[in-house]
Image (tube, rainbow, N blue to C red; front, side):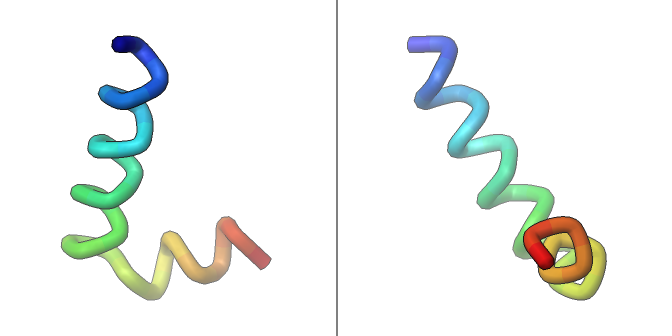
Length: 26
């Protein structure tokens, strides 16, 4: 349950801040 929430939260942030998410992944 916690993991799913984290994944959803990451996807949500990725949609709003795609540039920041990509920089973090790299």
